[in-house]
Length: 562
Image: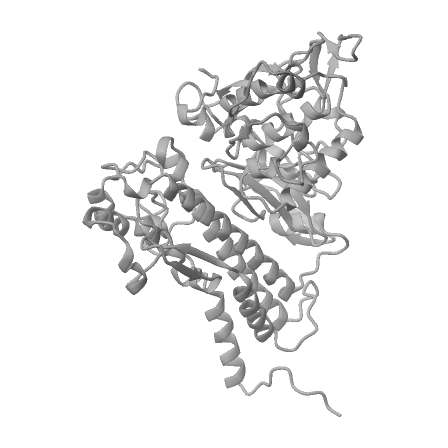
């Protein structure tokens, strides 16, 4: 079966024209897409990288805000319009927008079919997808309406577009993207990071220490920024994870009109073998093995056997990878603070729509992580799972830093003599600097912090039908202003085990009633959640290490001997 992906009616407006006189001269001038270049040059690709990097660094919290911000040098040439995109749309719409503004060709996969066979959801196919049809921006002397093209893209694109075999190399039905090398020359701003659990982001910066900063849009149109971590699962090449870059294309056989526009011709994709940074490294490992046996890949770097994520950072670091533990923890906390601010935007969007005042459905969606309608737009189970994974990753890494310090590991760059104490001091400073709050049901502001969130991480409700207090995990006196009745309270309690789960299971039936959730059993493959979430309380861990250090008679930061 071939899927020409179409989203529900409420997503049909993902790129909409707001109150424009379509026949106006200004609109006709600003919205025409004339293709004047046969291919993307190196200079165009570098400009694309700079464009994405600037938007990623901007202080904006929706795609529309970013496009209209000073970070976008083309904003003054846009007709009056608003942009609404989700995570899958963003890489395509942003690439198309840039192509429009620079007279560049653009083409895309317009239909996909599952390699699993008929039926099923192509966003989560077990064996990936195949390209069934392609489309491109027409080459005409007068150009085409660019906003119509962007609008059409939003109705076609889904994460199914990224879920395709990285070794495919069809000359006609070629894939839009390819698998790049894992180094600083290849993993650059504008590179796509695809999470096979149904999420796509764009790289906007690679730091000197190898950390990859990403940003993405969401179904509620809010924008989030974080760093790429272990929540992005590495799979075999058939599913296309993790890294993808837009394939070079060129216009062949066109003629040039008197105004410089290319007319006619066809779009040709550059084959994998002719792309300078094409590589199956993320599947083959190092030294290279069989990409079809990616589960057994090994990762050697400078004679050391590493896990994939440490290898990735080593490859992307300037010089040898060294962990500066205090700096690392500060950066992780700052990233988590960004995530919390982004979550606040998402929750507030649901509140403004009044979803918390609606009666909840009688059962959960078939799968809370991959669904449609109100739940897809306004719930946050996937976002919250990534947030919890971020907290767990910070906890695990800090524990590892302390262990590395105890054996004086060469990869650890730390010259002090009280790492737990220094980490704890940095934790308190970053916690104080993270300003997160919400306005409760009575209209009063409630201040939160990273420390507060850690204490209630598994109490944060992902359910948009519940009150703002429960969305932020309130209890005791803080919960008193919540106006949820008995039914919503019962739903909240029944969803506790789902909130404990940080692994997103898109292939598990989860369409349960309250009674089914309450009965159990619980476990990762039950669709009802798990009984306990992983440990994330970094403050308690560091305080415990400091207490043991004091009890053992060690002196933290002793004064210098005269």
